[in-house]
Image (cartoon, rainbow, N blue to C red; front, side, top):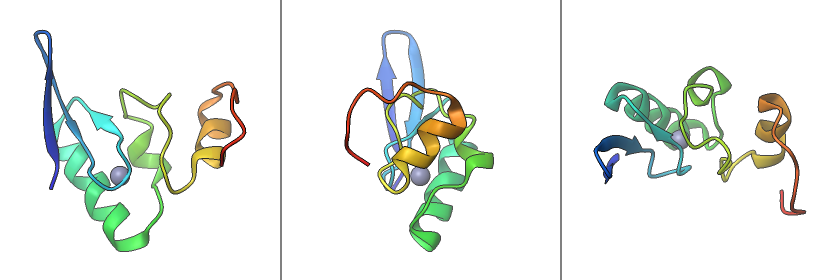
Length: 76
Ligand SMILES: [Zn+2]
């Protein structure tokens, strides 16, 4: 299930598998479908994530590098 989150006046959708949030339901559904099937994240999808600083549970280290985020903690 894709979760719908309402924060202030913004609404976004969260992939239940990896926790990535998307402004569009379609993207969250795509992400969820991918995650469920492959147990990994598709960078073509998660590049649209609005909370990419909260990395994917499957491939956090990889994702962080690809998104150019700082690696502040040692998990993943
Ligand atoms: Zn996902």
